[in-house]
Image (cartoon, rainbow, N blue to C red; front, top):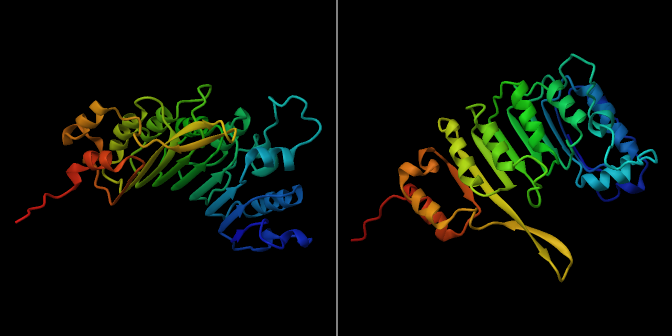
Length: 295
């Protein structure tokens, strides 16, 4: 089931969605939560259906707007020490419970959620058996680095698909995105699809590519976009864009033209997507191109 309270006309009806009535529901996708009533509906459904859900996708569209527009209470005097909103208000996960949450879950996609609260991050990493998850997407989720590291420390990972997206630049008060991805990739060997759209510090691209070699036997699809940020003085806003050089220096590109030095050359890929200039792409992937005889 896919439900979206932002659909045209929804706001004109006092609908009470009873998702828990769908006794055989195995897949749930909800994008956007506009009120505490809708949040209550979602949480109740997750409580009732969590033992049977195989596929769960939650997209809060904009975490800051959701947090202050839907969850905010006058008790939040200290904005730097918010409660564990993720597990107390959204996901039915109890810190004291020893039971596995969502035991049938195989695909999990979370967008615009925050794991910056340490209690929330640890509760989720402990309660969900991530060794059973085959496809994981964390899209614009604050604190995703800490969550992944915690998951790797607690579980044997068997992911087939990993999708990570982060807006903006790397906040140096948080874990280095490239090092985090590299650590996670070094932790297991089963990945078939990897999709990254993240800010990458210096030399981060090559670090990630070398760690992908742990999955050379299974990797078939790789998409890697390196994100950067600039400030538009005229509009007084920041803008993110793809770094078309992917933080690769000229000497890096020359070295990577040698197949023995290029991690991508060892992969049996069916699809490759890189956010770089075409001229760089040709040099990086020369070993993929069959020689052409012009007679």
